Image 1: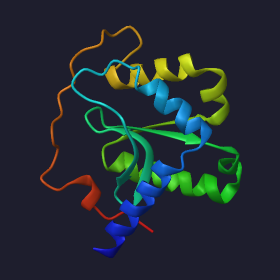
Image 2 (image 1 turned 90 degrees about the vertical axis):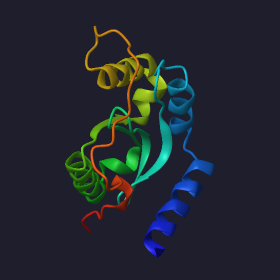
Image 3 (image 1 turned 90 degrees about the horizontal axis):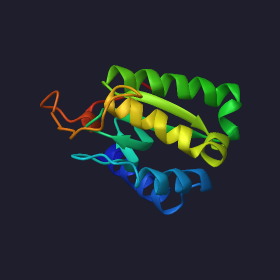
Image 4 (image 1 turned 45 degrees about the horizontal axis):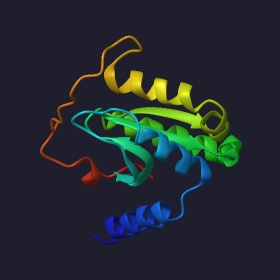
Length: 142
């Protein structure tokens, strides 16, 4: 399918040309102990490409630069977040400044989202498919 190939090519291009904030978070995420799972970067999900996703935890992490403060971009982000939530993902958004200035807080928030709370012990994650249809095959709204 042409749309799927285009989305996949876009994800590959974005992986080859990450922003500084994405590189910083990617390096930090690799230190996060996620026994039984992992994060992927620039992941096609539906008609979108998520900055980071942990499919096992059904978690998407987005890093927003300055352009996301513009109304048109904010509206697009809201529609995209709503679609991802309907597809069963939780979405965390951080500003570039959060990644650069408070990376430990960002990682703690992500860890808490993965394991279900700040005081919850890390545990082995188990991937379970929720449907026979892959999320990437579902069509997103325009």
